[in-house]
Every structure is written in C-alpha cells, then in structure tokens.
Length: 377
Image 1 (cartoon, rainbow, N blue to C red):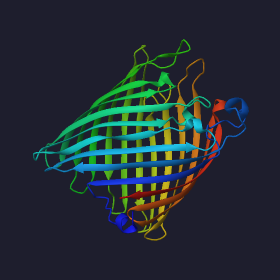
Image 2 (image 1 turned 30 degrees about the vertical axis):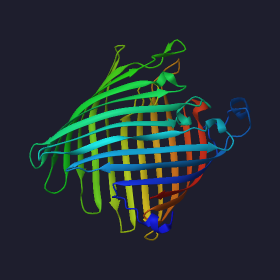
Image 3 (image 1 turned 60 degrees about the horizontal axis):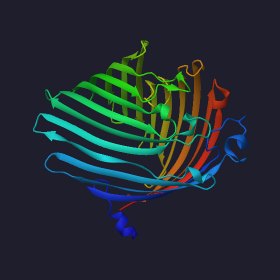
Image 4 (image 1 turned 180 degrees about the vertical axis):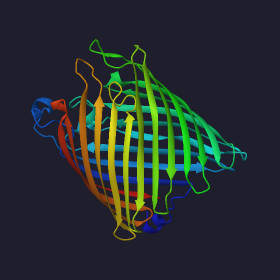
C-alpha cells in the first residue's frame, strides 16, 4: 500500500484497519528475584529474551440516526526468541452500542472478550498462565434537566485462567450515578455500586485462599476545568466488604488527577489513587496506592518526547500460611514518538522497573527496550 493510501486514513473514519510490528528486549522475562537459581527455575542460565510481536485489527461502525453500533477486534501474536513455549495468539475485541433515545434518554451496551498472557510479576515463579476475560455491560440514563443526568448500569465479567485456576472468578456489578453539570463546565457526581464476587475455587492445596464477597461503594466525584490549560478530577468514597465466611471490613477509596497544559508543546499530569484491586488480579482483597507523573513535550508537529514514573504500594492479605505483606513497585519509562502522517506511528522507548517485597522471592529488577511501528489504512 502506498504512502498516499495511508495518508487517506482519518481517525474519524467509520471503518479502518491497522497492522503493527513490535520489538522488545526484556532483561528479566519471568521477573525472577536476584537470588533465584535461574537454572533450577528455567532450565537454563538466561533470564532475558527478545520478543517480536505482530498484530492486526480493525474497527467498523454504522451510525443510523443518533445511534452508533461498532465492532472492534485486535489479534496479536508474540514470538519469543529463546522461550518459544510462551508464544501464543491473543485477542481483544467486542461489539458496542451507544446512542440517544429521543431527546431525554440515552444508553450503551457492550460484549467484549480478551485473552492475554498473565503478567509474571503476579504469578508464581516461571508459571505460564493465560487469562481469558469475557464481559458484558449495559447502561441506561435520562436527562432529568438540562444540568442533571441519572444513570443506572449493570455488568458481568468472567475471568478464566489456564494454570492459575484458583483465580477463576465471576464479578457481577450494578449501580447508579447522579451527575450535575454546572454552566461553567464543572461536573459533580454521586455514585453507588454493588458488586458480587464469586470464585470458582476457594482453596489451594487444601487451604483457604479466596473468599467470595460482596462489595458496596458510595462516593462523590468532581471534574473541574479550572482553565483552558488546567483541570482537576477527583473522587472519594466509602467501601465496605462482606465476606461469605462472615468477615467484613470497611475502608475508603478515591483518587485525584491534575492535568496541566503548560505550553502549546508541554503537558504534565499527576495522579493518585487508593483502590481495591480487581477481582482475580490477586488472591484475596488487596489494596493499592498508586502515584504517578507523566509528561509530553512536542519537539515538532510530528515528533514527541514522553515519559512517566509511577510508584505502587500494594498491601496483600495473608493466605496459605503467609501473613499480610506489602510490595512496592517503581517504574520509570521514557519514549520518543514519530508520526510522519496520521496513518503511520513509530516509537522507541526504554523502561526500568523494580519491586521490593516483604517476601524476598518476590523482589526483582527488570529493564526493557522496545520499538514499534503501526500503520492504519
């Protein structure tokens, strides 16, 4: 396909396709600790690998009247140079609808599916696990006045693992949101959500690992565009968890984001969040405090420099005769993007990540270097 054909692509097109190729060098593919015996765990004295990933996908939508019906699909295949047993075909995609119903009502619905290789920092040493997530959700709302909206929503998702079957889980959610938009652009929200979490397996090796639970959250949210260049988003609420085995706990959750367009070329964003981790991500109900900063600088209209740094403190509940423990993860990433046209994007990046854990075997360091190119048509 010629460069002229690529240039004809527009992000607002109702139909488009894309293909990409990526290279990644990973110094510690399995996220082994410094004192781990590499040969004993992996069968060879090599922690690093080079991964080539090919992917392709597309988007198609129709827009009858005030409705939008869309299909999305992305298929990817990573190829590991050394650890070829990790090669697989993954995907993510789904069908979605959103639209207005008359002048007063609006709604949305979707069915999605995804398959991916579970992150090695979240699985037992060198355990290869693939997770498939199937989800469905629907929402329906009404414009009560020109400034007030009310919406209800419901969803169900199921996560299935090939090896970590003790994390197979079904999550069912239902909730509502009452929002008020001021004439100056700010938005206030009152949110309530009820979640029921059911694990397929409560035990591992004959011991209790996961407990089914019900979660209720009630919170307030705010979007405040202070100026054309500075905006603030925040939320805070109360969280209660009732376990089926009789245990219960209450906590708070919330977060804040600040976005600042310093100049026409430079932007910075700060973020903080305190939240309960998604069901199936870890055993039990773990909390994470997330801190982040990211920035962008436009060297030219087609070349952009970007970077971010994050710090995550995750508190795990005790299980399998292991008491409560804490892990701290630091990540630093810097990259350079070049887009000669709207239909071609290339990037180079490097990343350094470390994790310190109360469990020595979970402590690791890792650095990656990557490059990719993506083409739309």
